[in-house]
Length: 223
Image 1 (cartoon, rainbow, N blue to C red):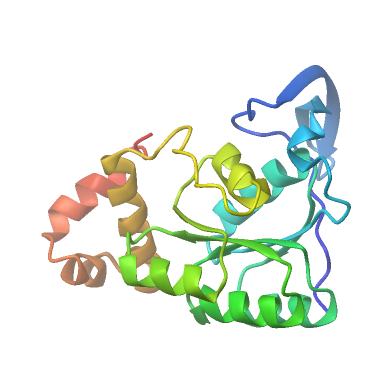
Image 2 (tube, helix red, strand yellow):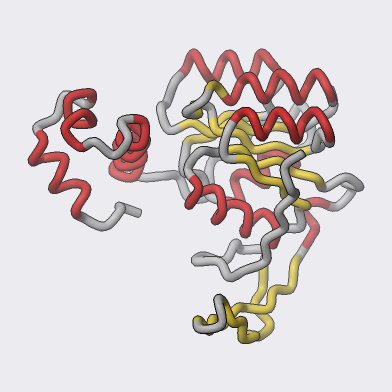
């Protein structure tokens, strides 16, 4: 069974319901010193939820670790999986109450994990993330039983709200919706990962000139 990971490091951007009350020093690898914020958590978003177990499934490890840190700060007990196989093991041995699942994975579809979770635990609350704007995928996810389908990347507050809102209520508009440039950049990154970081193959799949793609990749990610 994959190890449950609980992360409490610093965040690059602090969600609105978290307050920094101070800082502590943390030594990494006996050489790197980090100033880590001490967080006071307003757990009102999870008020009434006795089970706060949450599975995060995403094959983008950087995004996965950032999301794990943010969700831990928000009060969830987080387990992470970077592939479908590990996620299915977690679901089989210890099905969580909450789940945030990437729609498209290198070894399959996040909908497979959604179906497995709801089979093991019909009351589970799951949100699907997708960077593709795929209407068919969104319809399929909701039909299977997802609470919501959110664009990737999504603000942590939007994810928490989607997981914890009362059943039957309509989804709220995103707090900080991704800009068109950010959505485009995320899609390029996804295709690049699926092409094993091969720029020429990525450009071919995107029907884009290689030099144009190289210029985009050389710039900082849009907000």
